[in-house]
Length: 493
Ligand code: TAP
Image (cartoon, rainbow, N blue to C red; front, side):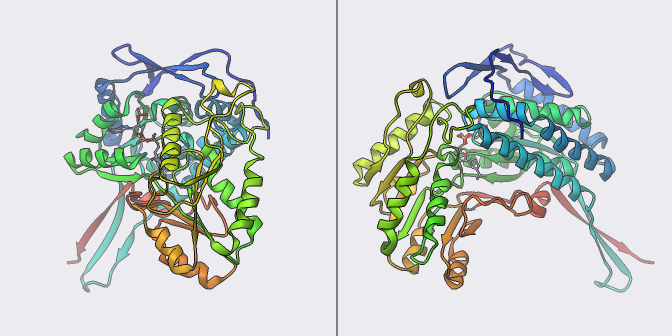
C-alpha cells in the first residue's frame, strides 16, 4: 500500500459544506488547529454559529421532505455508498496523511482507520439493497398487517476526535443507507477529515443538502443541534459528561438518540492464558492511539499466580515503544491530541501516585528528538492498583495502565463489573467454561475472548451498557437506529 509521508507544508483554509456549497461562517469567524506532534499550524476552519446550523438543518429538512434521498430507489443509495468506499480507498494516502497529522496517530494506523471506514460504507451499501418489512397474515382471518421501515428524518451527528473518520462513518453510512439526511459537527480538533469526507459523499452523488458539515464549538453549535426542533435524531459519540447534556437537550422535541460514551474496560488475564498472546493484547489494548480509545483496556486484572511473569514481559514490550513523528512509518506511538489532554494525563498520574499506586514505568513527558515540541507522554504503568482508586474508576484517555491482582473468577467478575461504565472487556483463558461464564457475567456491550480491540466491524453491533451509552452502532441494529417502523393494518372486505 502506498503511504504519503510528506508533512503538509501549506496551511489549508477549510470551509463548511452546507446545501452543496462551500461556505465560511456567517460571522466570518475562524479557528485554528495545530499538529499535536510539532505545534505547526495545520488549518483554519469556520467558527460556525447557530445561524449557520439553521441553514444546514433547513437544507437537510428540505431534501428529506422532497424525498430526493429519503424516497430514492434503494439502488441509487447503494451506488452512492459504494462510490464513497471506492473514493476513500483511492484517496487513502492523502486522507491517511491528513488524519495522522490532525490526531497525531501513526500513519499506518491512520491508513487502517480509513480502510475500516470504507468497509462500513460498503457494508451498508449492501444492506440498502436488502431493506424490507414483513407481511403478517395470521392475526385475524380477514386482515393483513404490513410492517414498513422508514428513515427517521434529519440526523444531527456529533463526533469526537480520537477516531474522527471511523466513528463518523459508523453514523453516516447507516443514516444515509436508511434515507436520512445529515448535519455533521466534528470535534474542533479534527474537523479537517470530516470536511474531506463530506466532499467525498457529495462527489459520490448525494444530492445537495443531504450531507452537510458545520464546524465550531460543541458547547455552542453542538448544544444547539441537540436542542434543534427540526432535527429528528442525534447520534453522538463523546464523553459521558457531555452525553448527559445532549440527552437532556434532545428531550426538548423527544428526539431519538444514540450515545456512544466513555469506558474503563477490564482486560482480564487468567492463570491458564497464553501469556505471550495476552501480554501483546494488554499492550495493544492500552497503547493503541496513545490510549485515547473509548474501549481501551485501561484496567488490567491479572491472576496472582502469573503476575510476576506477566509484568516482566509487559515491561519488555513497553520499552519497545518508539515515540515520534506520526508520518514516520517506524513510529509506534504519537502524541496525545492537545495540551488539555496532556494536562489531564499528568493530573491522573499525580492522583495515582498520591493514592498509593506503584508507578513502575513512564509517568512523565519524554525529552529529546524534538518530542518536547509535541504533546507526547511516555507509556505508563501503575501496579498495585485497587479498584476503588480514582485511576481504576475514571477514564484517563491516555497511555496509562492500571494493573490489579485477583485470586479467583468471582473476584475477577466483581472487579470487572465494579464500574459505572460497561463498554467493553476481554478475558484471556484457554478454558471454555471460564471464558463463557465471564463473557455472560460481564456487564458490557462487547466481550473479547483471547483478543483485544478485535474488529468484527462492520457486522457486529457496538455499544455500551450502563453509563457507556445507549443504542447500538454497526450491523443490522445500527441501521434500525435510523429507521422508524410503521404498522399498516388492512381490513379485507
Ligand atoms: P467530548 O468532549 O464529549 O466531545 C465530543 C463531541 O461533542 C465534540 O464534537 C464536541 O465538540 C461536542 N460537544 C462538546 N460539548 C457539547 C455540548 N454541550 N453539546 C453537544 N456537543 C458537544 O469528547 P471528546 O473529548 O471529543 O472525546 C473523548 C470522549 O469520547 C471520551 O470520553 C471517550 O471515551 C468518548 N468516546 C467514546 C466512544 C464510543 S464508541 N463509546 C468512541 C470514542 C470516544 P468540541 O470539539 O467543539 O468540544
